[in-house]
Length: 250
Image (tube, rainbow, N blue to C red; front, side, top):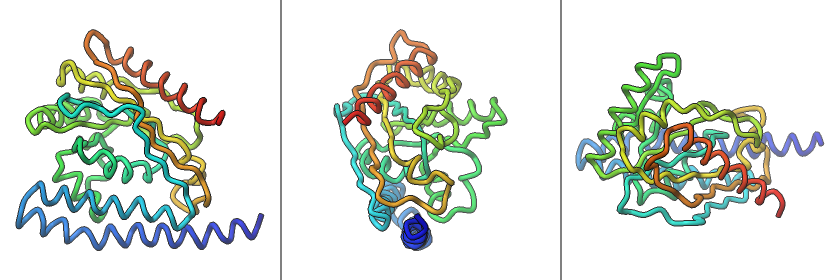
């Protein structure tokens, strides 16, 4: 047991060291791309960065699986709704969903001071919300929704509001989803089930637990038409729970 913890500590140092080094290296590349070419080039740099960030999980011998049970349509306005377990959830979502150009709902504290991440959140037009200020949060989400419609993008929200430390889903908060579906009528709702990241980092950022099965699964979508936010959140949570139960039975 002590040897396993020692190995995990060393591997975690390699993983997280590489992760933050990539953030530092790609920050000026993002800036140059945005200033000289524009938003599309900056977004492409972000996609490449997140490809490498996903790769850092190989340092801890993670088994990575990103699966589409159903491919979301490219001609619909899409709201991705996912459970949240770790900061490592996000690089895979950015890379594997890059065709859909997802814009994130994120906590406001991430909008400043973090190389690459803060710059991308600012330039992508992400909704940077203060969860203690409901009015500010809804205003930001409404602004982002208008941008998503104008630029033919998708959006992604974690309605749990914070990362779960176990495989058990936290209660879904409906406020953000309600604001999105109001401003993006007849959106296509696409649930994403994330599993394994909670057991990979049970104590938070460090150390990580090696050899975990990490999975991101895009589940069949449905129309938001004639559904309120409570109905949508309940349906998404049910789909995620049902799929993860099947996953763990295998």
